[in-house]
Image (tube, rainbow, N blue to C red):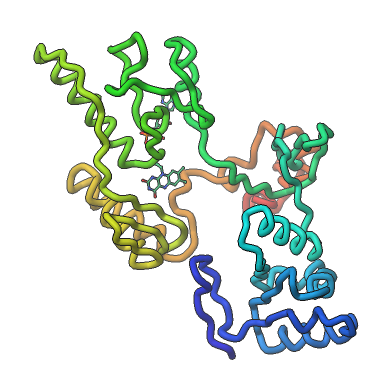
Length: 328
Ligand SMILES: Cc1cc2nc3c(=O)[nH]c(=O)nc-3n(C[C@H](O)[C@H](O)[C@H](O)COP(=O)(O)OP(=O)(O)OC[C@H]3O[C@@H](n4cnc5c(N)ncnc54)[C@H](O)[C@@H]3O)c2cc1C
């Protein structure tokens, strides 16, 4: 058994011996040679394949094999020797395509439903990709209330739908309306907890001062206390005045920072207990209800329910009566 080590910040536990696919790229390598080499890789439990655009036809030899049942057994890394943005991107794209990955660049998603994703490409053609699972990683959009505030006050909106506030965090022409946190943008500050909390405190103290008869206009000044972001299970990145921690050490600091900022002993204890519970095993105890309890999404038309495999008691499924809907 080959020992495994975490591969950089990806979190993947790669075997200490990885398979460099350069040998598959020689012109005289046949498909049979490639299959034999990859069978050995599998036999010895190697779970990491390293390939590059510069490895001749290695990607083409890997493609049919990856398209089969082997794909989910490996961490596949492709790399580039180019050091300019456009060149690196082009090589990585070409490498992925040669391994059978279909890339859709510059496409605008116009719909996501239970059957898949609909998008309009750069050529203005609209297509649908059928998919049972869609992973959306397009970032965070501010609450719609931000755009309503912008519309009514004449303030500007940024690309993320955040309303641009004045230095004292109020809306133009409305000193009585404050917008803070993720719904507001000021001085290009990032959408993180610390900005939201300091903004909230600033707005509160402005209101307090006004109630005390002090109408001075004080601009919001952000104090950079560093940043902490969770990037996975037991992994986080923390930066504090030039000190940078990542991985498990970062996560421990992240955890205590978040607990420390909660109000009151009770909140801190309850949060710690809930986190401990959710960190033991991979269950999701934070879920309040699930398909198993509700009988599936009742708003789905019958044809879609059939497609996603959810069955209901009225369809005469005795299994459901005992265990909840199939596919939940
Ligand atoms: C997945 C994820 C991970 C993150 N990780 C980190 C991290 O590690 N570190 C970090 O610093 N930041 C992190 N952030 C960012 C951080 O969560 C936000 O910056 C912070 O929560 C902003 O606080 P807020 O009060 O402005 O908004 P929110 O916390 O979003 O609170 C806004 C509240 O207003 C409610 N609301 C919205 N519209 C209305 C309405 N019309 N009427 C009534 N209520 C409404 C919402 O339901 C919500 O409860 C993360 C964000 C996400 C999405």
